[in-house]
Length: 299
Image (cartoon, rainbow, N blue to C red; front, side, top):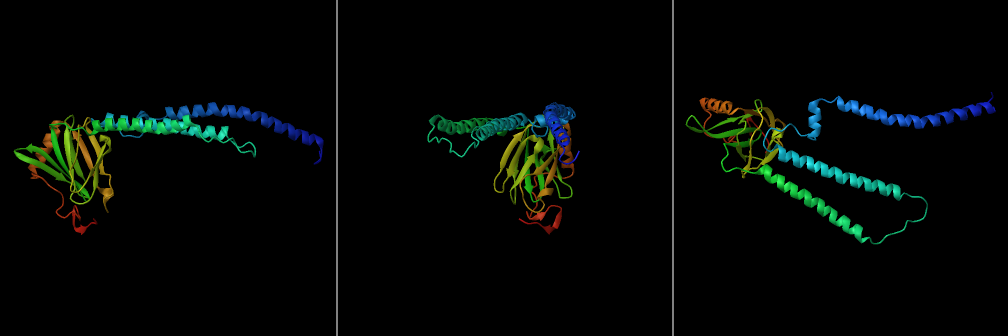
């Protein structure tokens, strides 16, 4: 009918009511659909991805410090999640419960002693629990033994690594190997045997980090930092400097090879045969880029 025809208006009103009635049904379907899609996405993840989710992003551990660090990491996330949910819940409660309904000012409360005691003591309790577990796990992570099986002096210099193995090899006291920008250093370690590391630097602050060992420690000029761990898994792992140290910081990487004790011994003997005995302290000039004697870096 015409633009002012009644039947047309009635049909339009009827269609709008039909659509309005259909909307709740569609909304009800969205929830199970989202659950189904989420389930499919989760089941589609590989076992490796699932395990990484369980570790909350940590790599697969390869040292005896793994459990202590992993427990502290996951525990901190759980504590943060609990506190976050509580805070978000209180915010949403306040938004909904005390939302503006009219122009009248809400009733003002000047003092509430129980609430003030709660929000004063609760942070102290949270900090106390986190402090206790951080110290407890930190002591476990940084503990040292009286007689480690091996000692390695790690020298971090701009912009590569030198590893001095303190073992006696073929009658020689210690062997060494170093890297260049073109050929990064390799650090060989024996599986199942404790290794003590002394970290030194002749130039600027670096940081010795092997993510799979769950351990990172700064390398500071004029100071010897120490760490100890036992590799628990054979394989090849990535190492890097985790402290911005100058022009070629991003290339200050190294490879860690965890091998059997026999393979480790054979590698040290090979270094001795090459004449790499004694100790190396890095470049004579700490500003010289290793492997590029004529090119000066920046301190």
